[in-house]
Structures are given as C-alpha cells and as structure tokens.
Amino acid sequence: MGTNDSSGHPSSSRQRSSVQSLRKRPRAQVLIIGGGINGVGTFRDLALQGVDVALVERGDYCQGASGASSHMIHGGIRYLENGEFRLVQESVVERNRLLRIAPHYVKPLQTTIPIFSTFSGVLSAPLRFLTHKQQGKPKERGAFLIKLGLSMYDFFSRDGGTVPRHQFRGRKRALAELPRLHPGIKYAATYFDASVHNPERLTLDVLQDGEKAGAAGPSDARASNYLSLVSMGGAAGNSSGSTGGSTVQLRDELTGEVFDFTADVIVNTTGAWVDLTNQAMGAASSFMGGTKGSHIVLDHPGLLEACNGREIFFEHTDGRIVLIYPMGDRVLVGTTDVDADMAEDAVCTDAEIDYFFDLIGHVFPDVPVSRDQIVYTFAGVRPLPRHDATQPGFVSRDYRIERGGQHTSAGGAVVLSLVGGKWTTFRALAEHLTNDVLKELGLERKVSTAKLAIGGGAGFPDTPAGIEQWIKSHMSAGRDADRISGLLTRYGTRAEEVLRYLDAGPDRLLHSTRELSVRELEFMARNEQVGHLIDVLIRRTSLAFRGLVTGELLNEVAEVLAVPLGWDAAARAAEIHYAQEVLERFHGVQVHSLVA
Ligand SMILES: Cc1cc2nc3c(=O)[nH]c(=O)nc-3n(C[C@H](O)[C@H](O)[C@H](O)COP(=O)(O)OP(=O)(O)OC[C@H]3O[C@@H](n4cnc5c(N)ncnc54)[C@H](O)[C@@H]3O)c2cc1C
Image (cartoon, rainbow, N blue to C red):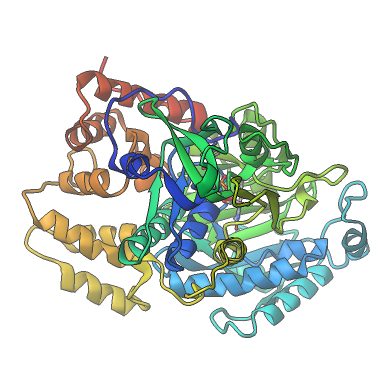
C-alpha cells in the first residue's frame, strides 16, 4: 500500500494494445519497473539513445509520490542547512532548464518567506551540516540564516539567468505587499522558484516522447500502466539461458493475466516500494525509509487573495518548513513529514488537517478557515533513503543508484535500484541512470536531454501576447477562446494534435462540465492509456484536484468513455463505484452518484 489510490480494481477482459505490445515480444534490453516521473524520465532518455526499453507501472502513471508532491520545482533552499550543496546546485540548474524545456507546465513561482526573528537557528544549522542529525527541537531560522541561504541560492542560479535575485523587505514594506500577514513579522524575503502545474500530464508527455523516440528509432520503446512486476518468472527466473538476462513475471492488473518478460538490465524505479520490488525479484534490500506527506486543497477566495499570487513558504512553530500557495483559483497547503508504514494507505488524517489550519493561523491570523472549504486532500510517500536517528525533515533528499544482480553470458540481469530522487531533478537523475545503463550495455550516449523540449512544451508561446495570439489563431466556428485556452493549458502545443482529432468528427461539450468534449475524452481513451474512470478525473484532467467532480460528471464521463474502452453497463457502474471509493478513501471527497 502506501499509495494514493489502489483499492480493489474492477476487473475487465479488455485487451489493451500497450500490454499486447509487451506480450507479443516479451524481451527488451532494459525493463524499467515503476512509472513515476523518475522511471518515465529514464524511459525517455534510454529511448532517445536508441535502446530497446520497456516500462511497466502497476497502477496509473504518476499515481505514487509523483502525483502527491507539493508541485514545487525548486532548488530546495532548505537543503542547504543539511549541507546538500550538490543537490541544491543541481536542483537550481534543473529548475532553470525545466522552465525552458517544459514551459507549458513549469511556471515561475514568486515565493515569500515571512521571518519572525533576526538571528535564531544560526548555531543549530552548522551543527546539522556536520552531524546530519537533528539535535532536539530545531531553532527558528532567523533573517540572518535565510539571507545567507538565499545568497547561496542566487549564486547557484547565476548562470541560469531566468529568475530574478532575491529581495529582503523590512516589516513595513512586507506588510504593504501582503497586508494580511501576521503583524508580528520582522522581515520578509522574496525570491523566485518554480511550480509544476500539471505533474500528471508532464509525466505523460515525457512518456510519450519516449514512445515516439522508440517508434522513430532503430529499437523499440514500449510502456504499459496497470501492469505490475509480481515475481521472478520462468523456471528459476533465469530462463533465457543462452540469450542472457533475467525473466520476471508481469501481471495485467485489469485482466489478471500473467506473462514472462526478459531483460538484460532491470531498472527498479518503484520509489518507496523499491525494497518490496527487489524482494519480489528474490533479492533482499533495505535501502528505503519513506516518509509520508499530506496536502489539502482549499476553495477559499480570502486565503487566495491574502497570498497575492505568491507562495508563502515558512517555518511553522515545530521547525517544519511548510507552504501555502495559489494554484489557479484554489489554494494548496502542505505538508507533513512522518515516517511511513508501507502496509498502510497514505491518506491525509484529521490531525494533519488540524496542523494545516494551525499553520495558516500562524502567518494569516485573521483569515479563518473551515473544513467545508477543503475540496480535495492527497498524500504520498517520499522515496527517501533509510534513516535511523535522523528526523524525517532532515533526511537527505539527494539520490543514489544501487547496483545489484549480475550480467553474464550464462544469464542473469543487472538490477539498478534508484534510492531517492525529487521531481525537480528528474531529468538529471534520468541522465545519470541512463548513463549507468549504457555502461552496462557497452553503449555510448547519442543525445543530450538538457535542452530538448518536452512534449507540448515545444514551440510553446513564451509571452502573454504570444499565448493570446496562439489562442486566436486556433479558434474556429463553435470553438471559442476559453475552449482553446483550456486545451493549451491542458496539453501545451500538443493541443494541435488534439484539435485535429476533435475536427475529424462531430463533437459536443459535456453537459456536466464545459471544460471537456465527447471527442476529447475519446482522444484520451485512445491515446493516453486510460485504464479507469478515476484516471481521467485525477490524472488526465485536474477536475478532482479542484473539487469539481459531481455525480452528474461521474455518470457522463463514464458513459462517454464506455464506448472506446468497451465497458458494458456493469463495467460502467463498477467504474463509477470505484471512482467514488478512491475519492472518498484517498482524497476526502464524497460524491453521490445518480446511479443506484
Ligand atoms: C508529500 C510530498 C511532497 C513532495 N514535494 C515535492 C516538491 O515540491 N518538489 C519536488 O521536487 N519533489 C517533491 N516530492 C518528491 C517527489 O514527488 C518524489 O521524490 C518523486 O515524485 C519520486 O518519483 P519516483 O518516480 O521515483 O517514485 P513514484 O512516483 O512513487 O513512482 C514509483 C512507481 O512505482 C510503481 N510500482 C511500485 N511497485 C511496482 C511493481 N511491483 N510493478 C510496477 N510498478 C510498481 C508505483 O505504483 C509508483 O507509481 C514530494 C513528495 C511527497 C510525497
């Protein structure tokens, strides 16, 4: 468990082309297990190098930690106090790169740190550099320490040139800019980081780039969701004999069918489940020590206004760094950091909601919040390395690659396990992992991903005027600016491909939301590996995140998807029921269906 949504799936007898492509030729040079951003990023990079690569994900893409992040693409100023300079530098460089190569989803994020003291924390922070352990309750980070951190941050950013340097404000000016901030603040520091607005879709774009590179190149790049690695396959797992490699058993989670698959190199990017996956392959490891983090999403115009378009990033009274920030017309509040039990569901608890309300009160004391303003909650497990005495908040956020297994002409695969890896650094991490795989295969890197636009980020207009022009030039009879703007936001410039699909047949907007049309849902079902109704609500659109799922919407979307996905009346009802269950159990949302 430890996942965001993985309760019992309704079954189906549908043969999916993604699974068939793996079944038909059950062998690849490299098999990646886990379709979070790190597995998918590595898939794309390997495909671009012409490697024959396959990827399997047991649920939907981006349903693990990658779908539960705080949406920040950030240098991680906080990690400076852990002494993680390499990580911070790489993160800042990658943040600047993602702003350029994925501008459709990664946007600059103005961030303000309210500061309540001048010198606190200065002595405790260097101690943490040395020991990597937390000595008692953390001291509050004062202005001096934050100024030092932000100056280093600017220094790491000096070659990027994409974000302005930080600014320090005294109390008076800070309160003029953010009048609802706690009047007891002494200073406010403002700087720029970035946020990823649609992590689920960015993951899909990265995946599809990989599939396209495979289709265009000499080898193949195949991926399927709802396909899990369950155990070693063949007679003893090394069934391929003279051809080398190891054989594992895969299970289609929608039909229950199992089959064997063989690869020379296995890449284990199953995040917090890395040890469990290694165990399933018969190799004990104890690399991981994941921590759970939760968030709430509020429909709260007063809080939205108080943030004034900025992320408010600050230290709560317990020393944890927390955040409040606007995402569209909603406000995201997070996060917690507690040792996770992988046998339990990762869900946002009542106690965590109390904590979030408390932290809002800490910086915006005159902005009341109530539980009925929460439209969505989510939680996930960070794939952190095993930690003993270190408190969760101070565990290293850097990543490493562990080599196991063996690769000989008589059989056996090398297994590379990823330990750690943030959203922000996924491209650089994928580059490292790919380089390691290429070394195992005796191959050379052919293509760098450092400047390669991702999916619908290619040709994305980079100014508000450019966006307006793009929208105007794609409007047509029956499709107004709002609709085109919605498509550009959802797909980036891939919206052109979607528009061609919409134009190829009669179409209409849904009755339950003006944001989607019948043919657009069909497009998703045919091109984006939709396995369940819930995938569309959470990961192909942001309807669930924004609290816009109604009983009418559930019924209508299920009815439209039923045609391309071959759902009969019973399967449709099961999908609606499953979506309700996931929303209630993992996201604190109750939706009453119109179907009995
Ligand atoms: C609360 C929280 C806040 C965060 N905030 C940020 C942030 O603001 N910025 C940032 O940069 N990072 C953030 N992170 C970290 C970041 O989200 C993760 O480190 C990153 O997404 C990990 O990606 P991954 O691909 O390694 O793992 P995951 O996304 O967890 O993917 C692993 C996948 O493996 C699959 N899997 C497991 N077992 C099997 C199997 N047997 N067969 C097939 N598939 C399997 C799972 O279903 C899962 O989809 C946050 C994380 C959390 C939890």
